[in-house]
Length: 389
Image (cartoon, rainbow, N blue to C red; front, side, top):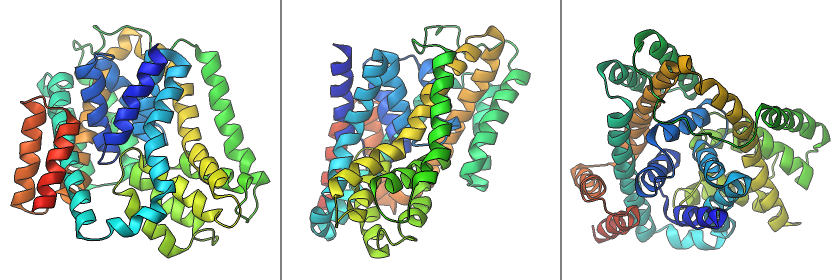
């Protein structure tokens, strides 16, 4: 059964995808474009572009879309649950495990995982650049997007640059269609269902705060975490300042507890938004930590998933139009540039400290790119080398 297959594949990724949202994109591409051929390079880039356009956790939205593409709604839910569950359970129990990961061994493990992320993202970047930027014009678009983001590292600028890349594609790529080999349907439902999903997103965004109180009870937790998930672009670490304001400012979580959980979140695979399970559990420690952890987890992801599911049929209709091919080609090149900027900062900047780290990351990259070794094996190799050193 396809949903079961989707669940098992994403469960493996949920257990092994270290390195944050940018690295997750590399893991997804290696698994679903190269290894399993579930998606073409063009379709993968389209879904990634949609997720980059919208607020929410981009890597989890991308996984949700891949599950939806492969096995419908059941596949989408299977992908989300399987990819999120390991990290959510780890964060829920991290209060006990954290002291054991705060010493030298824990630091070495986390650093080894950062080096894996460098290799995985570099592998994805090289292959996507080759596939999605086959001519000088698209290469120029990708380089310009990356350069601007490196000079002005603002998450809010990403959306404008992706739009500008699409418009540049329309003007500069009169004879370079990007979707000619991929006209397959993306989703099985139409724009009416999409409009309903977007309406639900808006209703919850404005309706939940009207029911919330200042106490950490289920409806208040739901409202706070839904708003955090709905108003942040870029996902990952970008949501942390908003979460800190949401839970620390109202004394649901102490500043030391927040920082301890944030530190723990760096050592786990899967989406960083699973940090919400930890915050919900801490906020409800005196009442029902399990219930509030589940509510916080579900409601921080819900707005991003509603939006991406709602937008997909509209995107599908637009992108399937022949005159939109050049726009999507430009967007795809812009996505490559965005990934390139993210590879340098924060992935490379925070992962590589010296020439030894650079050598380890290069070996891991060569294992992935030339040796086609499983990312799981590369994870083990990098962590072991880091521990030995």
